[in-house]
Length: 141
Image (tube, rainbow, N blue to C red; front, top):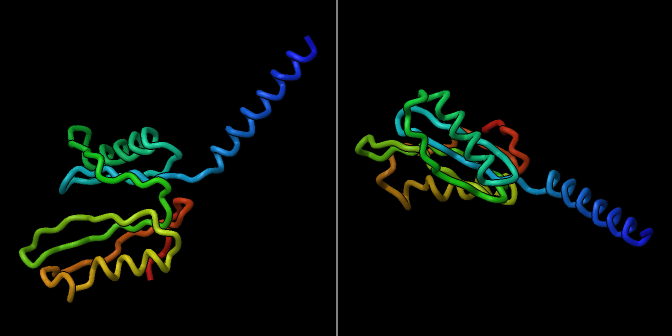
């Protein structure tokens, strides 16, 4: 009986430690958009929670009847950015970079993605939002 109780306590301890480790573990980033109407960005430890939050934000911004589509999921989120991109014909959209190890790597990826010599059809391309690996909004320079 004592052995059974000890085993239960050991398993309960491992379960508690695993739950704490999961809480402190990496987070992912989910992006949902209703084209031309709005969007949502959320961070969570799993895809379902993150997209539910992002779609709720999107519907709040774009209206309940808007089609808020899943656009991007990165896990772990790493350093992430929202880019505004417009081509020479005026077509514009948002592109998202995520999963970068640090700000320097993300900024290098943005520079490459927005390189007008490489992509001469771009009229405009710039980061409009940026997040660190913990999901905090970072000031753009």
